[in-house]
Amino acid sequence: MILSDVLFSIVAVAFVFFYFIIHMRSKFLSSVGTSIILFSFPVTVCITEGIGGVTYVGNLQIIAIYMVLGIAADDIFVFIDAWKRSAFLSDEVFQGKKTRRMAYAFRSSARAMAITSSTTSVAFFANIFSPLLPIKTFGIFSGVIIPVNFILVILFMPPGVILYEEYIADKFCCCFKCDCFKKKVKKSGINEDEENDRASSTESKEE
Image 1: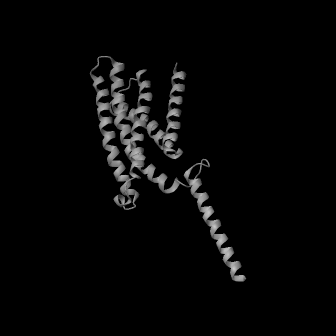
Image 2: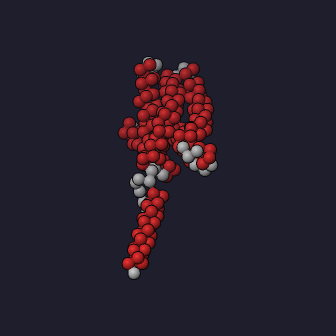
Image 3: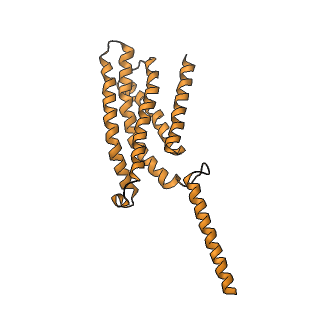
C-alpha cells in the first residue's frame, strides 16, 4: 500500500515536471518550480509538528501531495504567464530594464496568487472544527502548506527567472528548433557574409 502510494506520487511529480517543460520551455525553470513544490512539504512539517505540535499523520495527508502539486503548479503558471505577458509591452515602459519588467510581473501575479492561496487556505483551516482527528490534522496540514508554497514561489521564482534570462537562456540548445540555435545560425551566416565581403574586397584591391 505504501509502495503504491509512493509510486503514484513519483508519477504525479514527474508529470508536473514534464508539463512545466512543455509550458515554460526550460528545464532549469521546471526544476526550480518542482523543487519549490517538493521543498514546501518539509517546511510545512517543521511548522505543523515543530511549532504546532501536530504529530498525527494519516492517509489524508497523502492526498495533500496531489492537491499541492496542482495548486503550486497553478501559482507558478500565473507568475510565468505574467512574465511572458510583460515582454509584449512597450520597451518605453520598462526602459530596457529587466528589473522593472520583473516588478510588473511580480505585482500583477502575486496579487492573484495571494487571493487564491488565502481563500484556499482558509477553506482547509475550517476542518479544524471537525471532531475527527484525521480530518482535523488534514485541514491543519493543508491550510499551512498552501501559504508556505505561495511564499516559496514568490521568493524563489523571480530570481530563478532572472538567473535564467541573464545566464542560461540562449546558452544551451536542446534541439535544432529552439530560438538560441536559430540565433547562432543567423549569427554564423552573418559572419560568413562578412568574411566573403572581406575576401572579395581584398581580391579587388589586389587586382
